[in-house]
Image (cartoon, rainbow, N blue to C red; front, side, top):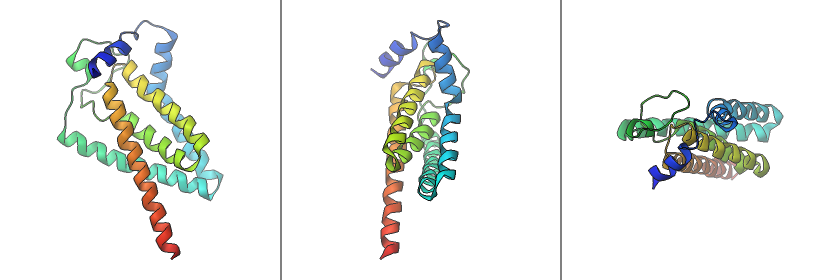
Length: 171
């Protein structure tokens, strides 16, 4: 099923359409929007700064998890196993987990836990990022879903731990 969904999405790409340009831009450049939001939060006030710190810490933890998974698990990228269109060059490393998806979902979930409105916008951008990674031929849908799950759970656990620490410090 994973391959079928991938093929249905990927076969729409590569026609030189405006959506190809958009998906390439999202896949390659959306991270700068996330960086801008984190910098904005850092300079806004102390509570936003705290949320930005949690997002950066969550990113670091998910990158560590990414490295661990890559050491022990290898899943070939879609273009290695099948004849599919790729719109931008890619490494031939393991497709799971998607580093792009891990990072944007770690940020968006951390922000969502602090500010639901801004976090929801960031989540939409994260979903678009994941979709763009499928569109350009780099990842299967399960890679994106799994990465979103890992990053979101990491952010939620980190948030819960920080609330526990604050609770114990106050007592």
